[in-house]
Length: 113
Length: 115
Image (cartoon, rainbow over all chains, first blue to last red; front, side, top):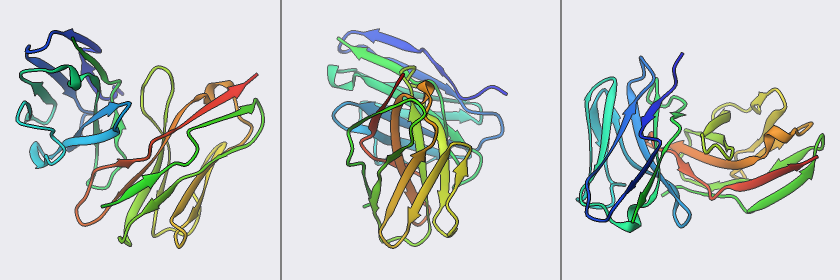
């Protein structure tokens, strides 16, 4: 079975540009999570969805970040405009149940110059 | 807010040895879950083991086992017969609280298995 799929795997962009990260959860999973990993802050949750509905977005750093889940098999995380401090690895994860184990995608390494 | 602390930034052992990684957490919740994830150089986050707080029995997965001490809020990971492929960052994580699904991670321990 396919795991969580993320694209792109690497993204290099210039400050001020819009960046869109994509995620396809494991089929049948109804919870989806976006995490960010940096050297300074470690791994932190940005937002999560249950049944395509955003439940907790308190980790979203600021209005430049937005996330959507238009259907059960697709989610996007958008940064507009991007800044150098947004450089990080962004992970998407999904789980089958509310307290289920979260399975992570391979991550997107974002570099903002 | 829950916090997770991994006090060992780095560890190094010889192949076939047993190694224990430490993790402590702080919570007022009684119902929660604890995890160990492995992140090899490929950066993929891989689940190693999961423990439900209501279960007194320590979880095991082949060479991996935990020592869960609920009163002490301690959750250590033991790796037996360590292999070169165990070289990775290891993260301890907490999930719990009313309706809370987010994972709260520790800072990680970089484990190196030497031949």
